[in-house]
Image (cartoon, rainbow, N blue to C red; front, top):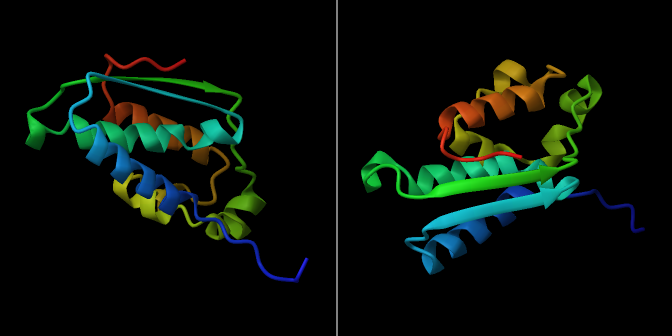
Length: 130
């Protein structure tokens, strides 16, 4: 340990991967997202970004289904973490793109539930969540 800080770049990594996906799969017929534990935590945000990219009205509206299975996602939302820890995760890049009103819920222990509700409301009833 060199005494340095901890830096998280998950939002930037997600954006980079999604740009690669959009470039290499311009017109998929179906998308399936899955993750467990910490790997499932960001899937509601990934779903929202993918749904917005492929199913926007500017691109002709609904064209593909996106199904998501999340197993035991980890949501660290105690008030202490939301007040002092989440800034270290730097999630703002992707949260801004989902139009989630973070400031309204940033100290609310129901933060993760509100994020889920927001994403599902923006999505399609044809997509499946398990």
